[in-house]
Image 1 (cartoon, one colour):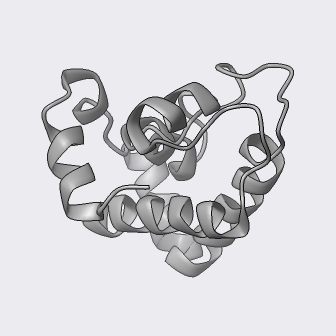
Image 2 (cartoon, helix red, strand yellow):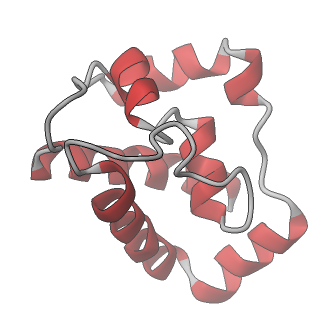
Length: 116
């Protein structure tokens, strides 16, 4: 897991990662529900879609749009286990620890906070 300042500096250099922005609908949802509720959704998505050791549809489990967390996951490379390995040095082939899940939630929170 990376230092968040270093991670966000590296993500900013990626044309693909830095292209993700919240559209009006996602921003309105985030403002209406509040960051704490949206982060609860993030924790649920992480535990169900990323935490298991084996994911049948890895690389396709996170939609590109439809929820502010999905956009944040792609922007921060927290969208699939392959990206977690490449960008965050979290190994494939094993379940995520609670510490790793909490780290991902912090990454998503920081990105979302910057968009409010």
